[in-house]
Length: 87
Image (cartoon, rainbow, N blue to C red; front, side):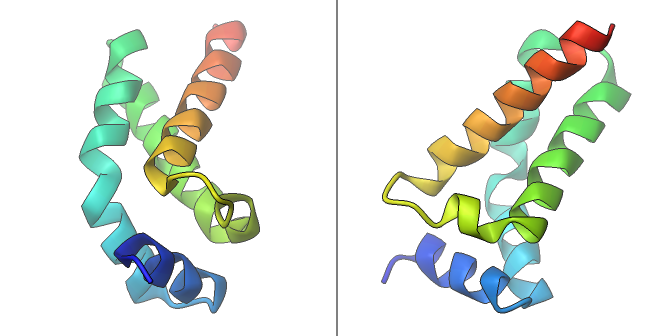
């Protein structure tokens, strides 16, 4: 079992430490993805928060046969498009 699989299993079992470790592992990458399209720091913070909140509330959406990082990036980009339409 990979580290990501272990973390997602923990998150599915409502282990807050697993979410914290996942955040520590990937938040910089997700932040950089958000910054590519938003110079506004507060918007980027909201995007990063959205991604990890979604992981916590819908872990089953991230338990697929794809790489976890790819799914996190897709989640960020999808939310980014939504927020761009709101502006």
